[in-house]
Length: 129
Image (cartoon, rainbow, N blue to C red):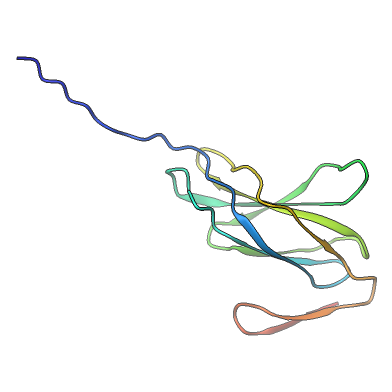
């Protein structure tokens, strides 16, 4: 008698994209971004996120990026130019690779000298200029 043993396994793949919930202008040089975790981690735990942003131009241009630690689903992009519209998207990352980009949201930085007070998830008011 021949006995066959079949083992089911799944291969890990890159995660599904997260979803950006908000992109909020904080000042003339910063935008706060919040996103939700992806619906599928691809069979491997998430190792982090890549936050991508670029000023809107007629030619599109390439995205600049920042790496974000795994536990966070919010970040502040700093060092932006005043009174420009920025496109923002995020990618989830696991050991296999990066997801496709999330939805893209846009935010306009304030003119120089203006600021916004926001409450963060720790219920503390933060004012940026």
